Image (tube, rainbow, N blue to C red; front, top):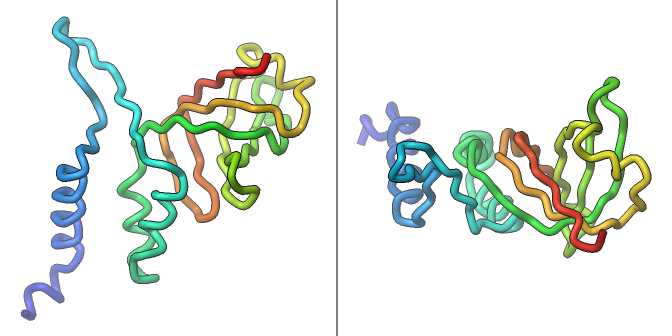
Amino acid sequence: MGWIFSNWEVLLGVVVTIICSILGITFIERKRDGRSKAIISSLSFGEIIEKIKEGAPAQRDQIASVYNGIIVKWETRLSSVTNKGRNKFRLCLSLRTSTTQLVFCDVARKKYRELGIASENTKIIVQGKISEIDPPAIHLVNVNLDFPEA
């Protein structure tokens, strides 16, 4: 029993790995030609936050870090756009079901010029890789945006 308490971080890592295997969470799929293709997770924003909140307060940061690198795709609404230097916009997106669940990401101005005139609550499908979770916010990198109503 003493080993479990002194090696709880190792044990937690093993448990998380097993759970990810059971849930079928995979990060990269290899094509026949050797190139890789990212797999989009079916996890919702709410599911991720709920799993983190289920953990003991001292373990929540470690649980949250397990989700880093997972690629997600969610329907959101534009909350705000701020300039981040000359070449980027920082977006704050809210989930369509909640204004307290926020997604933050940086995107290239040249690629998404329409954000310069987009209205608040514009529907945006965001796809990206989770880089950080700080409930109630999730930060994404390597983002692609789709504007279905445009």
